[in-house]
Image (tube, rainbow, N blue to C red; front, side, top):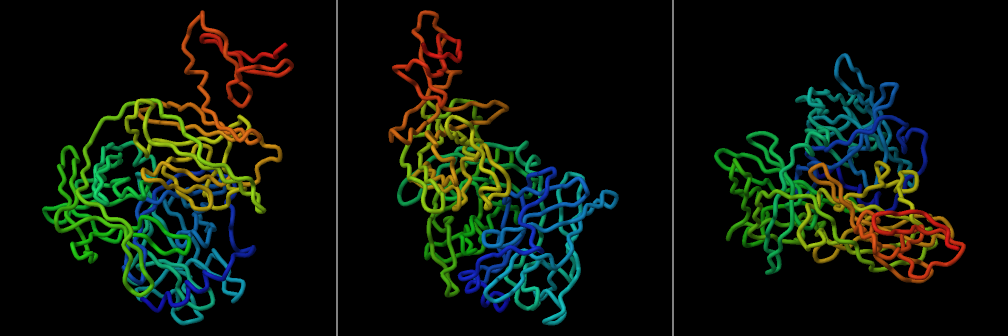
Amino acid sequence: MNRLFAFVSALAAVAMPVAAAEIITEAPAGQSVKYYADMQTFDNTFGFMGEYHTTQSIIFAEDGSVYFPNMLMRNTMPAYVKGTYDRKANTITVEAGQQVFFFPNVKIPVGLYSLDAEGLAGSSETVLYDRPLVFDVLDDGILALRSSEEFPMFGICNSNNSEEVYALAKDLRFIPVENVDNNLTFFTSTYLSDNTTTTTTASGYRENDDIIWIQGLVPKYPSSWIKVERFGEDFIIKSFQVMKYMSTEDPIVAAALNTDNNAMFQMIVQVDPESLEMSIGNEIFRLGNIMPDGSGSFEIYQKYDNISLTPREFTSSKPAAPSFVRYSKPNSAGETEFVFDSFAKDTDGELLVTSQLYFRMYIDGAPYTFTTAQYRWLDEDMALVPYNFNNYNVFSIGGNDKERRWVYLRNLPAGTETIGVELVYLINGTEQTSDRLVYDIAAGKADTVLGIEDVIEDSDAPAVYYDMQGLRIEHPVAGRLYIRVAGDKATKVMMK
């Protein structure tokens, strides 16, 4: 199948999308349902890779149409394809050939097609298959793509040449997120990397007796999932599970590495089937993150030894407040960089489950929403941003403990005075919010604001004043509106 990808990298490097009537860049109004997408995607270096539990939102419109995000190469080809929901048959049908991209410099339209056993999209170079993609809607809400011996795969390819396939996959299914999130077990995770032992958190659940899913097993990519599956009497992790796609669509995958740093096909996991306690890695195998190097081999980025997962009960607690790192003025494209640190710990320094942690931004004291209209790289509007969410166009994660967050705000209103951020912890049906970090742009100063709900009742305590952006004011000015907090009472007052 190597010939199928001969020139896609060169095209992707020089081409930019253009508006086209056939390309659906924005789904219409409808019910948005979150799913985890699972499939096997193909790469020239690794062969078929497990791409598991990527979060996607599917839109169900009132007229029975269904809009799926483009299923492959979504970093460079953001678009939707339209399906039709037949509720009597419990199927969703996506017609073949729907355009998801256009290479303007070479005038190549790109569409979605069923692929035959050879990985081709047509019976000849110019005759493409019109076989639709049909999803069965199962009783548990899972959408499972039908396949056959003749058509085992699907892909995106040149709509004028069936042999130019840019990406292909098989075994696609969409699992409702609520099916997973309502059945989670939380763990403390300990691992050795670069001669340093680190403890963090992870989440997981058992799909059945043979499959266990773990989120956060690979510390570099805490939002990614690893599939642990039974093989005979043992549980194993198969190599080449996708952790992330770079902006160039090159995959970074988790793989079993031996002592010579060769990638093996799998590694054994010691699992207690009752408690789900696990240990991974030994003197022979370790888990690593690797990426194709362009010559048929790979580069190694991280290696993890002696991974252990211990189930633990986590209780609700207040997150520690974020701390300010940097603010950069809007650039010529209207992009403002705001950088802060937010360790996944509570105010007592205890670990929080990162999959249950979020952050919320504020502009001039008002909650801010990252909309798809302003941030076209997002699948849905986001007011609460998952702590582990990493999208290089909007949010990036870094730091030794993955505590640093780069946020790229676009086209903020002229005269914006403050930018704020707080952490939100949602666990066991309880929400707790950190104190808010607020940066005053004009003053070039950051401050942490105590939430009004945290003020301790004390009838003898002196009144404390906050401005409308939540900043504490030591010397209120006459004629301005403030929030006055005295004991357990907070009121808006105009200073005289």
